[in-house]
Amino acid sequence: MPQITFVTGNANKLKEVLAILSTSEEALTQVGNFSITNQAIDLDEVQGTIDEVTIHKAKSAAEIIGGPVLVEDTCLGFTAFNDLPGPYIKWFVKSLGLAGIVDMLYKFEDKGARAITTIGYCEGPGQEVKLFQGITEGKIVSSRGPTNFGWDSIFEPNGYDQTYAEMDKLVKNGLSHRYKALAKLKEYLLSQ
Ligand SMILES: O=c1[nH]c(=O)c2ncn([C@@H]3O[C@H](COP(=O)(O)OP(=O)(O)OP(=O)(O)O)[C@@H](O)[C@H]3O)c2[nH]1
Ligand SMILES: [Mg+2]
Image (cartoon, rainbow, N blue to C red; front, top):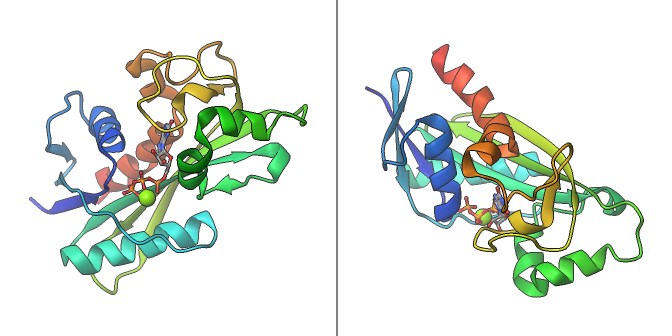
């Protein structure tokens, strides 16, 4: 069975990806003819558009692993900021904290935000990268719920009165940006 390595340094992402792709959280899962395993490698991330960042991550991962890889890059962008910080949200959370991010939007009436996951699939070194993207729209609110995963506690998806962090995992994993991107990847892998 062909093996695909999901390369990520983020344990929370890995948990969600495995939970969405299978129904268990074991370190190995299967989609169609493919088995998916994980390697925790922190890949270099270039500056650029979401697609450029993901393509670069996928190509570097394929070089390191020497075979088929999956990577993902997740963005959080604000409507009032023309979709920034986008791929740089990680550094904003690290530097400003969640309260600092909420404060960034203080003077804007529009609290709209978009969570975007872009998955890159590369079959090996030198191969083209296929992209699969999922977007969930919502708004930025004061932190509610556990704060152990990124910006989950300040993002409230449209149509819900809970933040991602307050939601049951099954609910988040049924509507999230990551779920939508993985649904497209799954459809592709099942057709191979
Ligand atoms: O509240 C959240 N709900 C999510 O569903 C989610 N997915 C990612 N993130 C965070 O957003 C940044 C993405 O950066 P990112 O894509 O480069 O990830 P990363 O560097 O942590 O891992 P990786 O690049 O090795 O895969 C990082 O700070 C992640 O912690 C999330 N936060
Ligand atoms: Mg990263």
